[in-house]
Image (cartoon, rainbow, N blue to C red; front, side, top):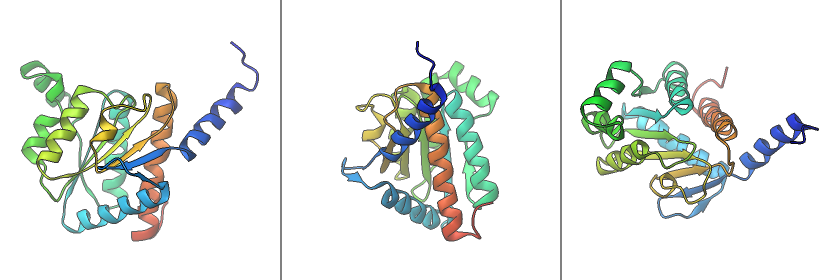
Length: 197
């Protein structure tokens, strides 16, 4: 493997792919990145005013990102947030029902039409993420998906807004998702709060 200019190429690849991420709506129409982000923050403000819950979920590193963003949104944007990160919940649902139900079980019992689900999945194909999206949609909640890796992944066909980062490795997709989520939150804070900090 050639390691010449490795970091420069790595950082440049993430930047270029972020600038070329593909955003689609629930009819698979392609949206501009800024328009999609603006739509998302405007819907967030509507949901916040309705005291809607913002439910974040992901697996592995994406689970920690979901927790991170859940906290940031709670503290900085005054969103009511929720995740499925409790060890007792994850192990009980996985053991008693199935890991596929680890998010959808709680979503089914808590989400309503005024709420929003945000899924973070590098592959976009995790069965528990797909079931979470489908359950939230059945309840009338608004769904935003973040995915990467394969362009034809399942989750990017299911959300109301779908952000697909065309990167092929987990670390790069996860890094891009972190930047995208902070961009979204900072855009919200700049428009509706006193700005980012």
